[in-house]
Length: 321
Image (cartoon, rainbow, N blue to C red; front, side, top):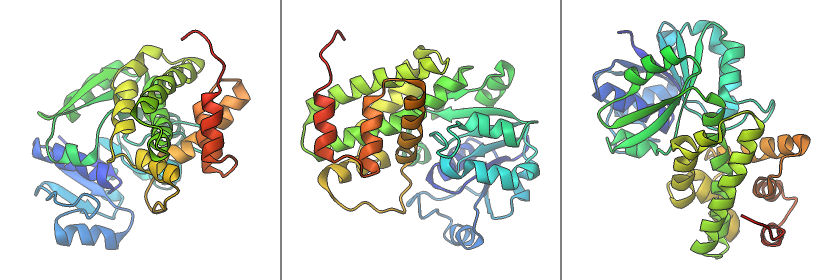
């Protein structure tokens, strides 16, 4: 079998490289900057995933051609740079399949990763890997279950077999839209859940927020032709619960900082912030009721205070559940 290429040397890309290598696959991870690649090689450890040593069958490179011939490439870049990465390097990636590991909606175009892959690499079969997972858990071999979404059933089976390991269990679906939206929208709800906790509204309020947020996610997915049941699985509800309840979640931690009025490191990637803006704009244009998403977008953009957002959500009309 050929080397599995991973574009992106962040925590998740590195974690996937580690778990696949430990299961006997040869892996090459591409880092955009050579100094960072060299630092990982020298330490045999990614500073973004401290305490995890790289197996000998993981190669770190800053040469995109080192993964260009891989039949399978995992795209582990942040969502907001995925389009620019594929526009620049897509012609040099000749993979039969590309699996997006990023979650979100492109702020500039409103597209998900499958559409971006299809536009820039039309000869490649696009897929999505999503679900409740933290990079540290995957890298340390803790049991993790994810959704693998691929519209091509045969390729989906092949990818499921290639990427599953003894500790990483993949469940298959052909509903790429539902899987994409579940992974994207849960980040928005995680910011909202963090705000709830950060402002001291309590666990009961967070549970209510998660429940109403999940209904909002299904409503948006249905408007896009996705199967709402997809969002009841790992890629939606499972990921939502994890991300809204753990301090390991960057989106949740960002929301807590907002709720407390505290500083949050701008260098930390918070995919839900851009996704909230993109989805709020789409929801307005299409007339989709998305009160939580709009509140998060308005708070992030400074158009609404935390107290105003909470007041608006608590004053929603009384109706049947």
